[in-house]
Structures are given as structure tokens and as C-alpha cells.
Image (cartoon, rainbow, N blue to C red; front, top):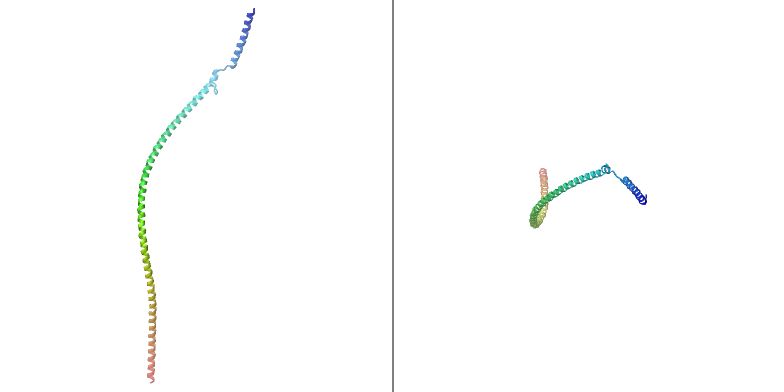
Amino acid sequence: MNLVGKIIIVSILVASVFFMAVAMAVYATHKNYREAVLAPDVGLQARLDKAKAENKALTEEAEKLKQQFDAEKAAKIQALVKLERELEIGRAELKTLDAKLAELEQAKSEAVAAMTATQEKTAGDRKEVGGQRTAVEEARKNREEHFQEVVRLTDELNQAVNEKELLRQRTEDLAKDAAKADQVLRNTR
């Protein structure tokens, strides 16, 4: 065997060892892709099912959110329409209230004018009543004075009547005494 044969045998040996090492490395790192795909929790199929379920849930949630958004948009439009109606009603009420306010202001100014006229008339009436009170007070004083005079004169009249009655009784008594004395004188004569 010559040198070239030896080199070829050694190179075949080295290549064999190298391929054996590569085969061992491949065998050591070899994965069963069927198990990797079909494993229950970590397999690609499980991850794919989870991703599909999550995609379905997110799609449903997006649909619900879209429906909710559409419902809220419709509610907002209805609320705006309602608020616009209420605004128009409020404006109409405001116009009505403004008209009533104008009427009330007019009535107030008329009432103030009437009150001023009434106050002026009342002031004149008060002056007149004051004059009449003074006249009534004077008349009352005069009446009191006349009443006092009438009472005094009545007392004097009653006294005079009593004195007259007393004098009449005395005169009668004296007349009786004089008649008795006359009779006694006639009888004694």
C-alpha cells in the first residue's frame, strides 16, 4: 500500500468519523415534528387553535363594539334631535314668556300710575279727613261744653225744684200752723 492509499484510507476514516459526529448531532437535536405540531398545550396545533379562538373572540368583540358604536351613534343622533326639539320648544316658551313679561311690565307701569294717582287722591283725602277731624273735635268739645252746661243747669233746676218743693211743704206746714194758731186764738177769745 503505498502512501496515496494510506492517505485515502485515513481521509475516509476522518470523513467517516466526521459524518458519524454529524449524524450523532443530528440525532441528538432531532425533533419529532409530528409531536411538536400535535402536542396538547405547547404544540403548534394547540397554538393555532388558541390563535383562532382568540381571533374569533376579538372578531366578535370588534363586532359587538361596532354594534355598540352604531347604537351609541344612533342614540347620540336621537338625543341631538330631541335636544333640538327641546331647544325649539324652549325658544317658543321664551318668546311666550317675553310677551307675558312685556304685558306684565305694561300692567306694572299702569298699576304704578294708578297707585300714584290713588296716593295723590289719598293724600288729598287725608287732608280733608284731617280738616274734618279738626271740625269733629271742635264739635265734640262744643258738645262737651254744652253738655256740661246742660248738666249744670239741670242740677240747678233740680235744686230749684227741690227747694220749691221744700218751700211749698214749709208753706203748707206754716199755713197749717197758722190755721191752728188762728183757731186757738179764736177759741181763746
